[in-house]
Length: 397
Image (cartoon, rainbow, N blue to C red; front, side, top):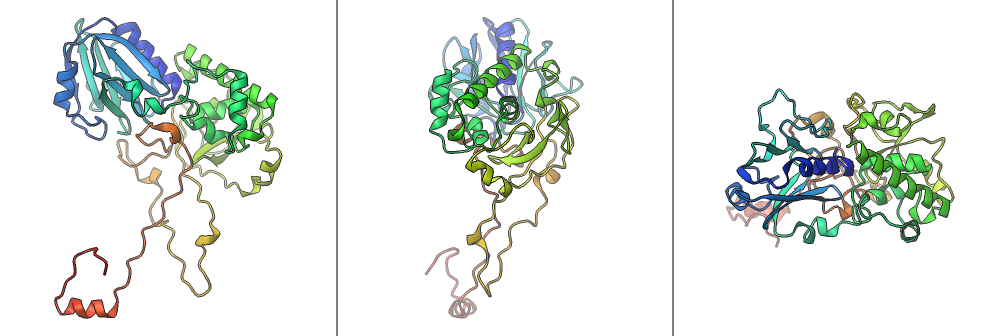
């Protein structure tokens, strides 16, 4: 799924090919799930004839500055992608639109033709992206709630260390918290923790000064390199965990075994031999349940994101008392990854809901339980019903 490097690659492609050009034709999809709070016709009218002045980005969000507001804003979600006809822009597995398909693609949500004939499209195969038209995108949600951009606004080492010292949560979910640092997604978080030799479930405040410095360095180096090669994973260093984290079964990186756990509701790849828990966190290690694998490998191009399910925490309070029947746990349905189709509207395994108000975008979410059982009707209610005295539906006495 698109993270900071992929969105930055799209931004640079727009800057290199579209600035100073006037919008001559506009097609906005009639899809209210993606096109947020505005009709396609009003969207089209608002930007037609305007000139693209710049392309801006914060975290995983991108917007076009025109010669006058409002401006189109793109929250990429799980499969959002920018295409410019005749221009190579980074593709990643879940968003890729085949060249043989019609143009603009049937997945296009935003399409413009510029005055020199160049055509630009924002596509979303999974429909978890958001396209908005805003007077000032940076001043409203979700962009206004984002933390400093991991590329453009890096923290100093001292500020980073002090910030981590205040956080009592585990480090992987913290890195995914877009309100803390914006732009880091699942694969980047796994990569930087691997390179810094930090366990994903180590509590942030327990990290040593040396660990904080190592993590700060790895965030900077991983993101800068990924951006430098325009998010082309084939250009990532061969020793990166990235190349080995996508298979169905644990593999090896540099001769070391990779294992998978669930951290912050996300499937997390790490190397137990190198990334060890320390202190009190080590005592909790036995309670961590392995992440579920069993999806098609995306190793072929390295740009996909594996299917995953959140671990279900055991809750003693949920256990039935003596003589009480246990309520069903909602396991009757098939896992989402078995049910969804190519453009399914079901929530994706990678749990990045369409809303990048991502201050808690990737915080752990409890698995949904089954709905409450229907309450048995009281005897007097049955008599009233039989007598034809129907009560308003859902109304309590």
